[in-house]
Image (cartoon, rainbow, N blue to C red; front, side, top):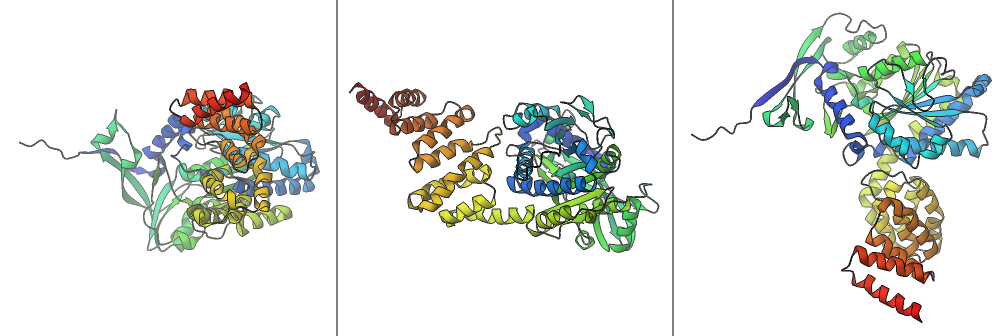
Length: 526
């Protein structure tokens, strides 16, 4: 008989309320295990961790701080706390703090205090942030604190640096909250509406036997989902702010499935309590913002990318805030991500500068619009001239991530570049360097800045950036060879010889480096 090679299915769970599904436990275990490595070519994060979106947020928050202190002058006696949920890599945090400080310094505002709280539920990420070179100056000035925070559990929120609890006594001013690409990764409940009847979607999970190890799935992408329905005839949540949302959907939606982001709403309830109901929330994620876009949808789609994520029902979050006496501003529909603003304890229209900033940076040229335009350039950058690439770098606030993608193209165009464009690039290279936020297994933009100056024969500046790159790129042939060439052209022959020899040591087969050693030794003997 031939061996039975048929793969057997293993049932992980059956007929579970989605917010109680094992998927969420697997999600948490993934992020806890991977730590900072989850953001290295696994979980997508650039779209909400670039200088442009950080600038949008900084200008909105800057306007909010000015509005609030104008209406409440006593607010200047206490710091404003700004808390990022699910901080992850910390890159957004760095860009935001840097930009907000620039705005405050630009208008010489020295009487408003703030503290930025980087939070996540895993200790691994906090350790990474505490040791990151880009964040250390802000940590030392007391502008950054850290907190372990599980969005789905009401536990005391301890600030690591201040060694105190985040409490109503500490939060005299409104708590500002950032939720980027986090609402889509915490728990949801799932429902379907058909002919004015409301049903709960119950989840069953199964996978191949080969995808199990110690009764746990190995690869989440290999998990299959089935659905069963159960009609709901009475108040599902027993919550005066949530049940009206289900009633609205039952009445207004025709035939569709939708999610209620219970984990996110739970977190908002908890933070409202901590902040004495004064909350200002900005969130960018993929999702739906109108009843029209919630209708005629199939069963929930799960996107796997190392972890997994869901489309966020921003309309439901908006309704929750409004039902509880708050306010909301939802960006008009765009393809891709959307930015939303929520308020509790006050109305957005009461804050004129904030209202204008939201109109400018959420609606007019939003993070979503920026990413759409950037994607077009990214996919076709080989078609553009040096002037166009310079304009895009300015539009992108001299983002190292983008420069690393197009640096080879820029270098190839430098010989034919006009003096004004070359000078524009050279002038802005310090801005590009200042935006460098190092992450594991990523290229170093400082090295590429060195290559730029090397190519335009500014050997002193090239050497400066090569030296700055050394701690990040380590002992590499290309670094020492390039440094030696710059030192040779700058007349630093002894240093050049040392580094040419180091290059030969790292790559004994390099004939060019060996020839330079011989040439330099002879020149020095003369």
